[in-house]
Amino acid sequence: MHETVFYVAAVWMTGLLATGVVLVIRARSTMVRILALDTVTLVLIAVLILLAAARRTSYYLDAALILALLSFASTIAAARFESEGKVLS
Amino acid sequence: MNLSLDALAPWIADALVLLGVTVMTIGMYGIYRMPDLYTRLHAASKSAFLGVISLAVASMFAGEAAITERAILIGALLLLTTPVSAHVIARAAYLDGQRDAPAETMMAESNERGTRPVRSPMPD
Image 1 (cartoon, rainbow over the protein chains, first blue to last red):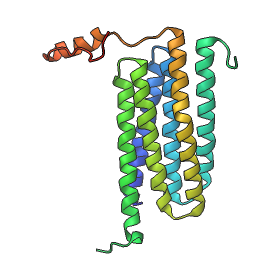
Image 2 (tube, chains in turn purple, brown; image 1 turned 30 degrees about the vertical axis):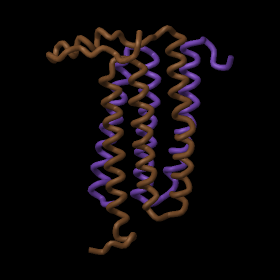
Image 3 (cartoon, each protein chain N blue to C red; image 1 turned 60 degrees about the vertical axis):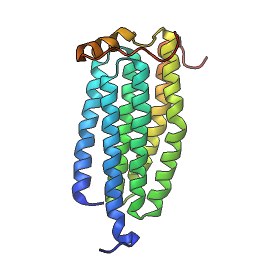
């Protein structure tokens, strides 16, 4: 891809990350906070994929894969703990 | 203009990156503006996920086999786990007692704008 598009997309997604963090802080209920954290992790995965595509190395994608797995597991654990009191019922 | 795939690949990757970033921006804005948790889940799970998939497809145009394999793997994993996460959050919120935002909040907005409030098409 061209360099200009890479820079614009990287800066814009950093702004999206900041917006997500502000949403996490300003949320009024815990469920919205969990949802916003999941979305922040998704944006982070997108930033890593963009970097991997621009620099043509595959190492950032390994980190993105691990982040996807971790966000999935932690979202489920946090939501179940918040509603039922225990994670594995 | 050279129309072979080698020459068009950077432009297609550009377009996919911009599309993905736009869709993710719309998703974030939806989370900010939606009135309650269930509609926010719609915005977050669908839009953010589609943005990441579009960026993963854009990264396949980089030309390395290792990147393509891992991008397909990330796409498949997100395809399988994003609906499960959304369902678990919705179920946890329902068991906690959260229900939809009352219709008065949405009717109040349309009253401010000067239009007639819309009754829901679903039977009560």
